[in-house]
Length: 351
Image (cartoon, one colour):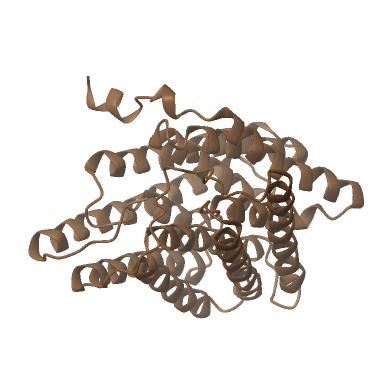
């Protein structure tokens, strides 16, 4: 089997269509409701709040599930408010906050792999949140930061309410997680020097991407930080195959997003593409990591671009900045490899 075939090899046993249908519904229902009342601009925050809280559900007793989901919901609410509040403000504030949050999200490995994974999801949402007001040239006074935060909180609360009803109807029994491939470990681990150094390198990489995009006020550069995060390894010891799948997925996602943004000029149709891509990501998470990363990248990149009209020049610049973001991520992989060779000790778990 060639390397390319290995990257895109599908484990049919890992395909989970019911889970993809649930993810599709989580995004579709809020869209229908908000479109009916004329508040579609809150759709991203509300639906992604519900989706990310759902993914963070670790399974087990409902008390444990509730604690985890509520924590993700509350932290996500704060990050939503922060992202929309500073996204259109001074660039240096955006850079400093992004670097700090990237580093802190990495340190969450101390509380186990599941917490670490949730922190990475919330970081990816924050990068979307800062990109939306920047792309629309909204100042903090006009970004609607508290309304967007409220939308995220409502989405989180709605998902928690749904899980509560399900728990009551199913006899108040413990249940398995909907994402068994995501590490469920919540035991505390030591933060070794290699781990901290890697997290600093990654925070620096995100800082560079955000600084270029926001500091130079480059049109359509908002894809760069997201591409950097998607392309990077999540730990020092992540397998080379997983790293290659992340990069391939990020590139394919950027190309697919560009194709739809250039050929589809109906906002509702693009929202439908976001819903479908999220469903594909949920269905193929355990079947093929490259397809999963491609679907996630498609979802996020179209979501960032949704408020802004597109043309060939615009999307050409976005693809260029996506390649630059991937380049920054690959550089981080190289630096992390050097760190791994020169250091020994416990490393962060891969997701």
